[in-house]
Image (cartoon, rainbow, N blue to C red):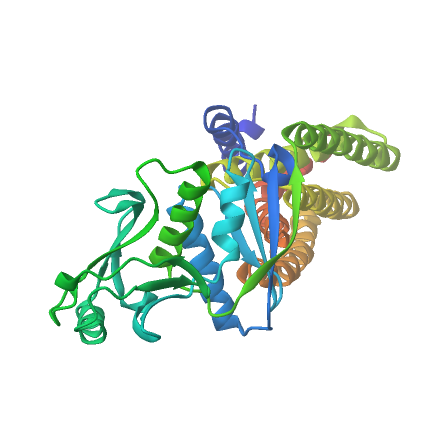
Length: 389
């Protein structure tokens, strides 16, 4: 009961309880490799710098969001690869078409460019127009002026509309639109009043390209890796079994070393509490746990046990009047190790290096929770228990 009145122990209990409640009511989300889905890897046709890569990932994210996919991860892998993780429920065929196009749009009349995608100011979602099923859009003031100048006196000519050098529509220019005046409202027609599914996919690809803009370089799909929900569940089950085995192995080792449950149980319970704190943190920020993140949790558990052994040994080695100084010495070692771990993980987190970001987040979170919440409480607990031991 005396331990429950200690502020550090009480703070740990409150944090663990809050984590459990958060996990119960908010749940834990899993990444594509655990819940099922696909990872699409794109290859740029040439190496790009960091600034261009940032533009590419931003445009691809915008394209996926435009198609109703907000639950996706887009990240760079080096200077020539981009990985996109999409959930199982997504229309993979449409996504492939949307992300693989560079999105360079332009209109020509008599081989003269009338306007480009940069002149498009507003785009409407695909639907039926006066000319059929297609995409309506509005030109900027400068774009409309360019079109008026190029189209002047060319009524009856075709307006050839290209996307990535592919002719997507070639309506005949009405004489009313060739009067040299500004006509910002334009339309790309892809079908009649009864579009097929393929027509709709084509229209959405055009809409997405106009809405998000063009990529600075062309990208190609290198490969697609799909994981079924069933296989994802198997990964989760295997990860849980691996975690339990690791936990039992740690229990066996420290049991052999200390030979008393008064030391072994606090170490195991403190390690388990740190896992709960990490899972609660992931639930609060909505971070999706993937295999890399689970690896980070297991690594954190190992670090936690190491630090608790240091605290225990320093407590056992110190004379009764010097225990406080021994524990301070232990925490000096722990803070140093924590600082180097965080420093090593920071580049993975800040540079968003793909799946390794999950490993960095769970590792950093585990180290911080351990240093500031669980290990101070453990030091108090073990000192109190060894005083009676």
